[in-house]
Length: 282
Image (cartoon, rainbow, N blue to C red; front, side, top):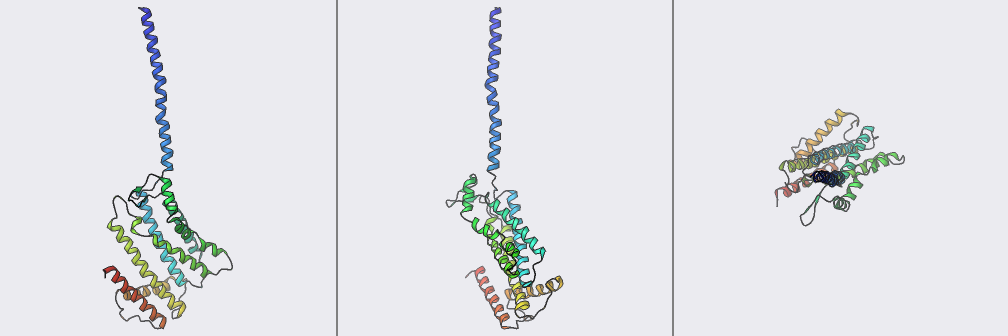
């Protein structure tokens, strides 16, 4: 009887030891799996279209593109043949950083295949798709060639301004699809915001060109490029004139005087008519 008790105790202790030895590797598996999952999560850091950080970044990108477009067009038309101020150079450096961060994010943004399947779980496929589609365009536009030219002494500031205008081609990336969630679809407020963005650009650009014609070509107006009050007054009057000829035929209070101004006015009016026909339908 005592031998049975000893044997039972030893068998019980042995079974517990064996059980402990059998459980220990099983307990270590979840920890290794969690660490591997953590590494995979870092490697598969994908910016989903419906995520909060992606939505915030898209709005920040649009506001930065709008500010850069407004400042670049305005400074080019008013400060032609003038020195480049350090404030504008600092802004261009800031915008350049934003465009390169956007490229980094685009390498992690899902895409829709031709068969309608959303690819959001394969980081390699996402990177390759962006590399073969929009990456060359985004990189060329984001590359600060204008700032490099500014450092070369034999280039004039006007060459810098021309290349600075070329970098504005990034606005073609501002469209509703940038905000679209392939599952939820577009929101009406997004479409309205994008439409407002393009409307302001299409009004701001002709107004600045009208200022450039009056200042640098016909030399009918003399303004100090560093005077905010003079530039503001000229810009508001130019903006008013462009809005009147885009929406109507003009009220006659501001009339084009030279042949170039008349040709420019007619061109803008014809473009406005074609735009109305396109929007309303034909």
